[in-house]
Amino acid sequence: MKQWYEILFQNYARTYDKEAFTQGTIQEVDFVEEEIHGDRTKRILDIGCGTGRHSIELAKRGYKVTGIDFSESQLRRAREKASEAQTIVEFIHADARDIKFSHEFDVAIMLCEGGFPLMETDEMNFAILQGAARALKSGGTFILTTLNALFPLAHSIEEFMNSNTVEGTSSGHVFNTMTLRDSSTFEVTDDDGQVLALQCNERYYMPSEIIWMMKSLRFSKIEIFGCQAGNFSRTIQLTPNDYEMLVIAKIAQEKLI
Image (tube, rainbow, N blue to C red; front, side, top):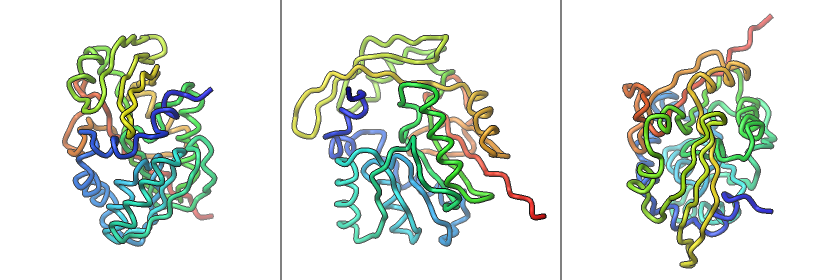
């Protein structure tokens, strides 16, 4: 049986590119560049790359990028866009829960919930973080955004989603304060005009959980900020008013013996 996110991303590429939260690509890539000091020798892994908006923009700026995603439909659109932009990106069909790379990348990005935290179990979500850590070289940088559990404890997710969603509506939200999971019905129109009613389940994370998981995966420096699509910044302090959090982590440098 297919999960809700598998059904959604079967035929959602062009609609996805129209969503309000995907319009800030230039600024988000500017931020990534600042974090890696514009070093174009660095090899970048884009986990859950979707239609390739970050991968392609990075490649246009001279970076060597590999993008992975489990959706053939999203990847097909990503390859079309890369061709249109006359850029080269290695797009690979792969499951983020089973990343095969080992110590090959200087930078990994996982933006706009690129797999994590959409998975149906905490173990699956953690496996994505494990794969990202394994893919990075010593001293590598990991930049990701994820859902902030402080937000639903202080706000209505349903009200927020329906005020910020372009193509779909969200209803029936039930947030479980024990599991920090939100279940809901999401209605969206796919690229062929078909209306889908999806039973969604997403995991929100406390900042302390992210820090603990990162530390267990040999990240030595973990920083967390508030996250606004198209306005990534180190100046935004994370609060319960932030729907997402921006996490920047560094793999520990291996000591030479």
